[in-house]
Length: 514
Image 1 (tube, rainbow, N blue to C red):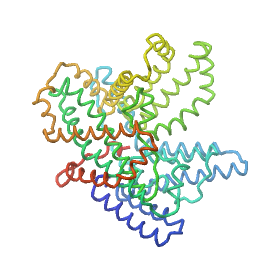
Image 2 (cartoon, rainbow, N blue to C red):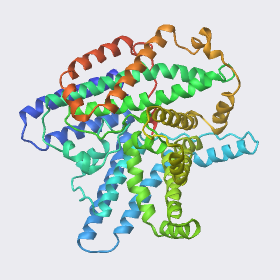
Image 3 (cartoon, rainbow, N blue to C red):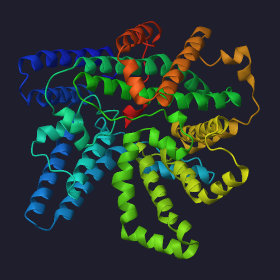
């Protein structure tokens, strides 16, 4: 049951109607909202993942709940062993995650080494039925456990509330990655739905459907056609394939998060912002502050900062200052932390080196170079007198950042490192057939589909431009008057131009696999 299926909207719509009626009848019951949403989330998990996912998630949440209570109990009684409890629960969670997500990682690693050394050995993957959304909810529950261990959060005594926090059905499979202190006020708040909740929720849902069904599904046709036959589609075709995949991934993942955010808002629950016009970024570091914001924030707060405070990294900083001077030397632990964090972040996406490089080490390298080159960049601006905010320079930086990011996405999209390097080498084959009428229409889309895609991309750009350049206060004032109209218009566009219906099998959301 995906977010673009009829079953999901029947399921979510039925729960919403029940909640709307119940909240009016039991308007003073503080247990109504979390109770109903808990049952809905358990039902959603069972429908999508079966008993295995339901039981496995229950065991995971129960382990974290018991661990959090024991850590707090020992701390309150000033007993030792909180670190041992935390370490044991952490190890168990990571071991369970490794079994389901990374059991094939050693085999894929040997396969890549074989390719690098000229061999052709291939790994036959071990098939294991993994619980759905295991990567997302493991991070969510781990963040809660770490906060309890650090003492920044009180342990939740009600196991059902904690299970709802980690398994809230709109966000469970695609995020955003939740924080307990930020989600709980609206998740466990008073029942009732405001007019603003309905308007915002409906608009966000149909905007997500527009991204997924009108844009992403058409871009997927181009990407799959080009990457599926790289002998025919080389040169300029592979370049446009890389560009299209960057936007496909954005509209696919962003569309899924929009549907999740809108669905949650219909119940009065506010999820965190996960995308903030990422293609307006002027550097790779800024891009990752705008893309999958909650995931980056999780790794920054729970991995990067503790690493930099650790004894090992403090010693690394002292060594760097002696070796390279105070200013440059203090960057040594930062760069080491970047590579550590981004390796783990890439590994989180999957047990393949295409993920580890394309969503991890490649970006760590780019950001590390930027950190190391800061003095040279400063001198460059001083000597050239280039205005940092000149429109042409800003546009250059944004285009440069997009190209660098799109290179990483090629690794992300590839099945292996060999495929990624074949794509890069094929880009320089000299095939310019894309720029002919026949070539443009040979990638699986009709002329009408290409026109729809072009207009839709303009609408997407206009929305990003408006959000990027309008003041928040003015934007909120304007939006009050046209949210309902825009929702209806987008719903009409999705119904007419969306890729769905009998005989059509929309691609699953890319991030649903995590």
